Length: 457
Image (cartoon, rainbow, N blue to C red; front, side, top):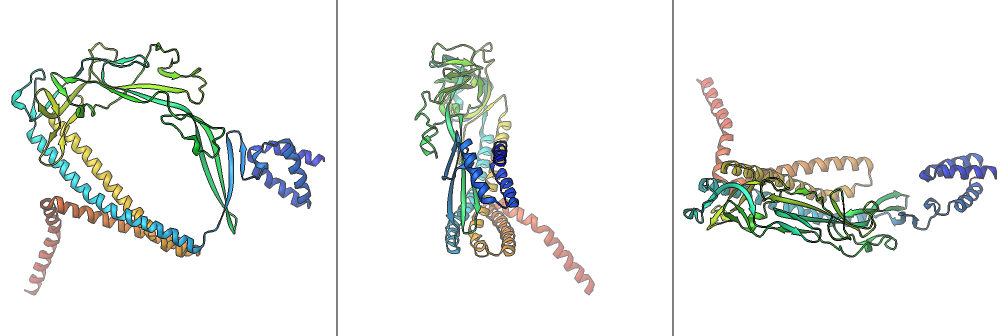
């Protein structure tokens, strides 16, 4: 009995790592030669002392507060089942493989169209040096101007008594909710696979409604069905640079948001201000599920130079002049032009910045197209790996070989597709580069022919 009491004390000490304790106990019992009897006695005493310990229950759903573990089993997959899964994956891989060609090819066309459109804009743009004067001769032309943003009225959120003189005011909302986290383990037990899934529930601020009905244990972790306050973006009706008014499509591009830190407590008694953040909660220091947190940000300061937000933002614009309005300009190359950059920039600087952004996007899509092709090939060739999966050494060699094969093939096909895109969309440039690349070969061939001719002479 004294030994059992000792084991109970050890069990309490090892509670954070129950599995380690079980191993120590079983090893001791085997040495003593009374494993079964001592184990039953220990288990009964430990269960009576710690009835809530999940390690002492084998019910398939072990619970302890905001954590619990479910245990399930599944049979080992047969070769036929694995082949069927690989075939389904191969069908998906074929789709990814085909789509990657379209992405790579069309990406080259888009890059060429953007470059031609920007070049056209640079050739046609008319600079406006005085944004206070509406030059009628520039009607329907592509113009470039710089100046401070200006709006007629401040943007106001009456729910929280927030008022700013800017082009945009954005309200961001988060609700305190239960969130479920999962961690799954699969343990091979020979004839079957044991699946252990750990579930942990935490309370977090989320900008969207978390559906608790999908939780493994929704009974004690319920969330509200909707938010009491919704996110919103307020946009100034009239926005000007000098006497030129910006159309909505140009205002959409003014999106360099900065956090707004309010300092005045709102009149709504249900709202509390703490550290520049609004809370709809009884105690912001100890939020409850369903409490709301609201923050604000703004973009495009458009007030006086002495406004609380600071001086108005200066912007540079390339767009079509239509009367006193600035709107979208359609190029003959295909892309519309309407550019808004913060700061004072020349037309050349703005075009170069856009060209750089286009090049970054082009290379990103090239890399994405290659990755999609590589993954598609992996899915397609996985059926070969499935066939030899039961031979350990052969399985490793085949996996390495297939990976190397897929990398080489995807890189080769990606390069060929990009080259075909260049030939299709930039034939003259492609032929010129091809001729330039063949020059060393032609030079070597001619030089070799001359050497042979001289040797015969």
